[in-house]
Length: 223
Image (cartoon, rainbow, N blue to C red; front, side):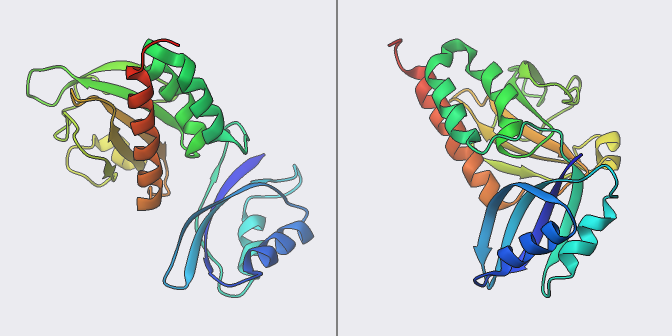
């Protein structure tokens, strides 16, 4: 079974190699590593690992905590496609998407950001914050009847599960989200995951960059 580990590690040479060695010694395979942030002497890394059938998830934490200075921010099962060139694949597909851009983003963005789902929402024009779903991925929660005070969206946002507008059920599931505008009408692309970890600013910046490219490419005339 695959798991996503988010680690906060001292930012010094060889430290991530020590983590890899500790996991390897425990019989745990590393599938991919994404460095999310670096600064103030630490780095934040997302590590997707494959756990052997005879091991429990706690063995992951035990293995990495054996390396001095390493902190486990979160651990959750990961069922997404294990593609090490996720963003390049998405950019290539966007060039051919045209009017199918919302559907493509909803399907592919969960791969890029190790998230559970993605949804593209258009403001319904009533001024109440309710929306119309343009595209959505499997496992996305229903936004029907949910008032979104940030819609229409004009700037990228981190949307935490503690916000007042978040339905109680989503709060109980710790549904963490981020949103980025797709066009001048305030249409929003929302990416989310249940149980955390919270999205970081570095992820939001990557997200905004990708949706900006998607919006530009969608406006280009057919090749």
